[in-house]
Length: 164
Image (cartoon, rainbow, N blue to C red; front, side, top):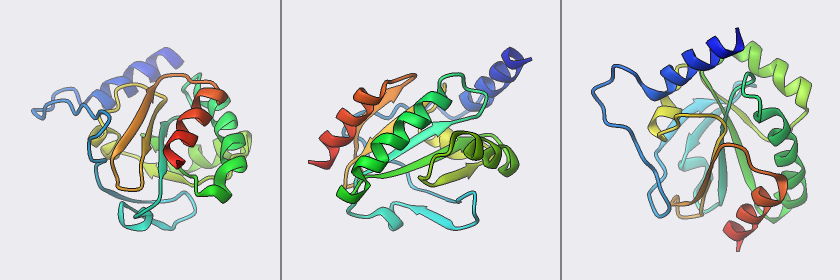
C-alpha cells in the first residue's frame, strides 16, 4: 500500500501529463514565490514575510520513510540556531491538514508547517522526490539543495554556511 501511495505521489509531484517543462532549481537561482497557509491557519507569503532572512524550505510527506528522522534532526538544528536567524518552513506536499497535524504531534517539531495540498509549490520548485530541502539566502537565492536523506551534521553545515 505504501508503495502505491509513493508511486501516486511521485506521479503527482512529477506533473505527469503537464505541458510545462520540469523546473530545475540550482545554486544561484531565484527561489520561486509562493503563498499558502500554515497548518494553524496563518498566511505565509514568500519572499515577502522572509525578506532579508536566510530560510530553509523543506518539502516532505508523512509517508516518506526518511522524513520523520530528518524532521527530528532539523528540529535539533533549528533549536540551536533559531536565535541566530535560522528560519525553517516545512512544506507538506500533497496531504491534508489532518494528516499534517497528526505527523507534527507524532514527531514534535516546532518550526512552521505549510500546506501544499495540490503540490503546486512543490512543482514550482521542481520537487520530484521527498524529502527535498532548499537553503535560500537572505536575497532569496538558492544557496544549496539536498535531494533525499541528509544527516543532522550535513543539514547544520548547510544552514550555518547560509547564516554567515
